[in-house]
Amino acid sequence: MKEFLCGSVFFGMFISVFAYEIGLLIKKKWKLAILNPLLISILLVMIFLILTGTDYEDYSTGAKYLSYLLTPSTVCLAIPLYRELAQLKKNWKAIGIGVLAGVLTSLGSVLLLASLFGFTHQQYVTLLPKSITTAIGMGVSEELGGIVNVTVAAIIITGILGNMIADMVYSLFRIQEPVAKGLALGASAHAVGTVKAMQMGEVEGAISSLAIAVAGIITVAGASIFANFL
Amino acid sequence: MKYMKQFCIIMGISFFGELLKFILPFPIPASIYGLILMFGALLSGVIPLKEVESAADFLVAIMPMMFIPAGVGLMAEWDSLSGIWLQLLLIIVISTVAVMAVTGRITQWLIRHDRKKGGMEK
Image 1: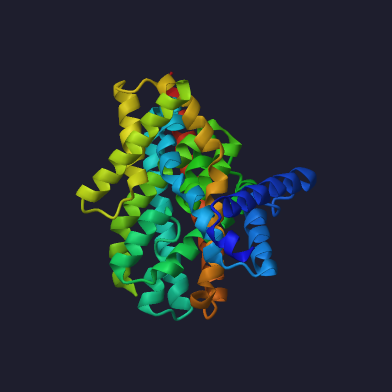
Image 2 (image 1 turned 30 degrees about the horizontal axis):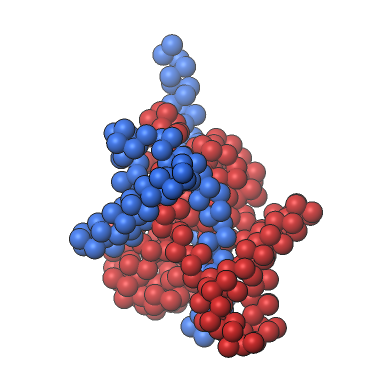
């Protein structure tokens, strides 16, 4: 049985999609912000793997094909962006300044907190790209001499957290403009934040996907400057 | 047959994104090059919106589940996280709230400021 599961392509895919379905059902039933379908499905798969003594590598044999779809899907984020071209044209100045402010806040807050906690230079640069999309973040971390695996972990935790807390942060800070909501989700929580923005509306989703690309590119330059500060 | 052509275009652009990543020296992933290429193709009219729309909407709709394997992957990174997990979590929580609030507030203020100014000119 174990040998079969190790080689199975659809085992990992099936339990991932099945766990997400359960996550959606739980969310529908209780409607609490903390019951995030993505978080629930990740925890369910982890519990399942631990209880059955399955290695992550065996799960990953099939589940990795789900991740391969991320590249074409990110390419497709251009479609909602194109449909919302009018919003982009009308608000390009606000969007540009907003993303820049977001990137500076991200880098600045990591600098402040890392020096507060007495982090080493290596630990600090590992966290600098935490708010941007995984593929760019890995490159930045590697370039600056960070621990790439920890960077990837931090990026994923940041994304899931941003996805979970967006509704709360927006009502707390009275952020109501669809463009501002989408931009803030993309700049703080990359593609996992965009997933949440898509659920809020087409404008939010479109602007959020734009923010991923712009914040990612600004961070490449900004992180290499901020790396000198600690 | 509609979907075949649409998926073909999307896979084609993803491939060109990979090619750009291979040629250019920047730490920018294939997916971002692809996004820019696709946006440019739509803007210039090389690819009409209806030629990719259905397949693209489907892929975007099922995107959340593509993050599950990476999330479960945190399990395998536990050894490198165990020493600093509390500080790491604190930094992530504080910084993410700060980025979200600052980006949202500034953008909202600028949009409303522009709108008010535009309204007065009329």
